[in-house]
Length: 243
Image 1: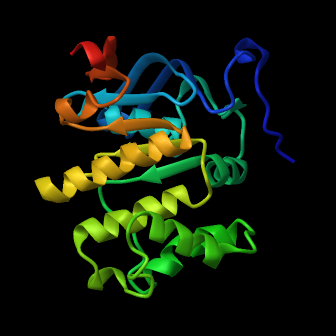
Image 2 (image 1 turned 90 degrees about the horizontal axis):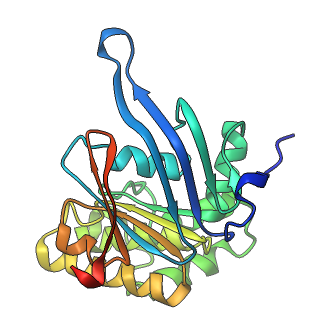
Image 3 (image 1 turned 30 degrees about the horizontal axis):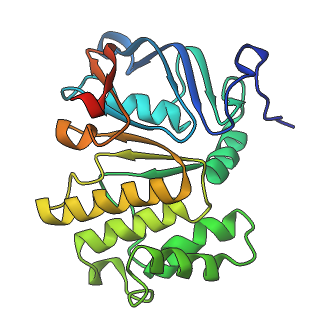
């Protein structure tokens, strides 16, 4: 049986922080294998909002996937919420992610045959939450969709679908929220509404937030910005208030 442990080397970390040390990750095989992340070391503090920026192919989304436990590095250490990912089975990693990490993607990833309420409730039900439906309804109301609970994704606008996706990410009350280009499929006005909602939830709940974006002005709404280029951290930190 897997145990979720915190290595002594990072015993001082807050329970909702992220610690990445000397991470390398390559994808593909043979001649097509590409070194995506190159000796990445990064720490995200408790309750911090971190923006990840950089050109396409710089490794931003891959680094986010490593933080969320959706990609395993070839080498290096990944510790999230005090739990080391090294050595955990896929099942143990999925259980941890379901409790502690909320994920919002550019594509909404809603199940088309399920209502908004069902899309938010099903992951909670699978995690054994006895009040999944009530919790899902509460989260949907909190993102402005209290009157759209029984609508299917095709009956919702893009902005409404992203709100459902955000409610689904928030429903387990995660300590960490990661968002990968959450406005990428939205128009400017709708995207701004989603971003405002994202930062409102971050402030209300004190979650750690990691935001991947191509938009530097959006990234600089975070407490700190890290820039990636060619799989390496180019600038370790920028104080958004000073930018």
